[in-house]
Image 1 (tube, rainbow, N blue to C red):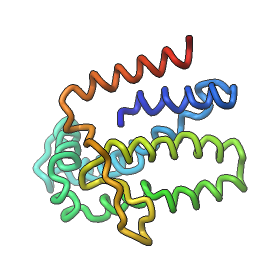
Image 2 (cartoon, helix red, strand yellow):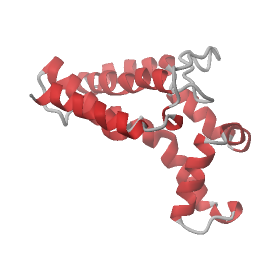
Image 3 (tube, rainbow, N blue to C red):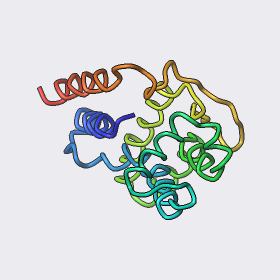
Length: 173
C-alpha cells in the first residue's frame, strides 16, 4: 500500500479515536516500507555489479521488478529477503513485539497497535500474490489471500488518491 495512504489513515484513526495530533502515530504505519524494501535495496546496491546494475535508478527498477513481477525468482535468489517479509507481516510476531512495547512504553505500544496492525490489515486485502499474508508465520504457512494485488490493478494510483481524499475529508472537516 502507498506510504501516503498509510500515514494519513493512521493519523486519522488516532486523531478521531484518541484525540491526539496526527503526527504522533505515523511511524509504525509505514515501517513496512523500510522493513524489507530498504534493506533489500541497500543489499542490491552494494552488490550491483553482480546483477549488472549501473546506478541507483537501475537498482530501484530491479528491486521493484523482482519484488512485484518475478516473485518466485525473488524467493529463490533471495530467500532471506522473502523470509523477512513473512516474519514482519506475521500477526503472531507482531503481537509478541507489541507485548514487549507494552511493558516499555504505553505510547509506543499504542502507536504500534494502530499503525502497524492497520498496515497488516490493509495488506491482507491488497495482496493476492506470493506475498499474501501469513498471519501465524513461522508456526504455520496458513495464508490469507486478498481480493486484489495492488500493483497489478489498472488505475490503482487513482483509487489510492481518491481514498486519500475521502480519508482527508473525513478527518479534517
